[in-house]
Image (cartoon, rainbow, N blue to C red; front, side, top):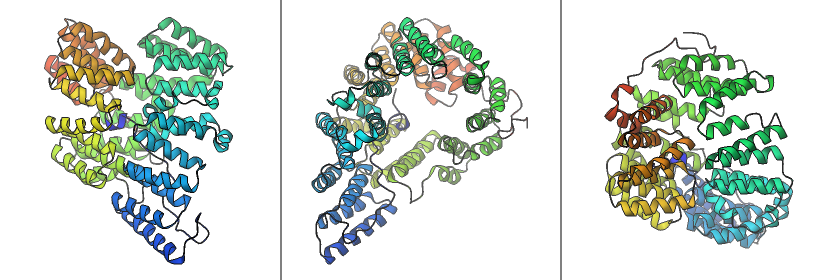
Length: 579
């Protein structure tokens, strides 16, 4: 399975302010005459104008020129931030070197250096810099756990975890740090490591409920039901409130959905867990296309301020599934300013594009010129993907090429371009593009997996495809997307029996439409049509728009893919009453 750009963490960098302050006398570390200062200010102004216009290269050059004129830590930080956001890693490295020459112990400079070293695949050097950062007074004051969380957010767990795993620092030995490392390992698809960190946290006096809950999830992900359930029960015994859903979560990870649902029903009867249980039961019903039950549960949650945004989102999604576009759009529009604004805007954009309202659709997910670089890149990539999903492949490729011109070295832009090329049918160019990226970053599991999967899916050099995917799985041993790819290339190589357990585990860990398509396909080919039917039926309920899934099911059981039709009255997402 290819990981879409939204499934993999962007290589984001330090956000050091939306705009740079102009330099003034006394703002620089070293002396500069009035002419140099004036020229530097002019360079900064020009750079910011270029940035507003989407010209990353000119903005980075402008800041680099200003930095050569004056020695100022804030200026160096801004130069490094812009260069990294633009994907210009070597420019960022130069700015960071200048920054550290001005302020060697600045924690922000150290963080930026870690980011540059990770982007260059220099994990050993990044670990050394990170150890220095963790020993700094500023980090010791704010806390190691907060620093781990910040780095994971900036760079993504899959990139940060390998560095932290080899970082030698006393700050990482404390119980709370071990627990944070365990959570990071879990997010980076290293379940055995996560279990080990949880055990260490317990031994060092860490919070029992949190450590046991982590241990339960890790063991469940690894398929050890006895150990997982024992840890989940210990988590609840240690803290009945914080660990209330530990056993339910564990049962879901083990693939024991009906037991998880029954446990959630029990928790719904308790005052402290009622609303959370109701939310989970609503999601459970929605993902199985039981829209009558889902509507009932989400309508009940509209009265709870904490639950209301989620309830509105899913009531709108139910209206969308039933073909009531106006109700769905009204619901999605209500979510502006909430944590669900982004997903709601993307869903609304899909509806508008399907109705032929292209400009309105693209406008919904566009970012204005004042937005940060990362947000603008993400919006342009989302626009290209929206067009591709809507069947406008030529326009999608035009969009990604325009983005590529503005961000010629941005890793996410290059990756998404390759994926869109493959979806548009230009397999040869997609492979060439991924080969180039893989040569530059051979340790990037996402790149290796994507290249291997495309080779396997198009039956090109299966031996190399399998090797690429296995290397990716070594880097992220529990990643369901990579497990799916390995199962698929194994099946393509004529070994369906060996492919099935890989695909079963991938599906258990992540109920994704692509994985279901492959798992069902191999089940069907292995003489288990009823198993394939059950997998596809469940997946179509949860992910009915997945093109790979729909095409696969149509080839075998077309009756499972009926046109959408209302099953019950649509509820108003604001009041929960029938329309």
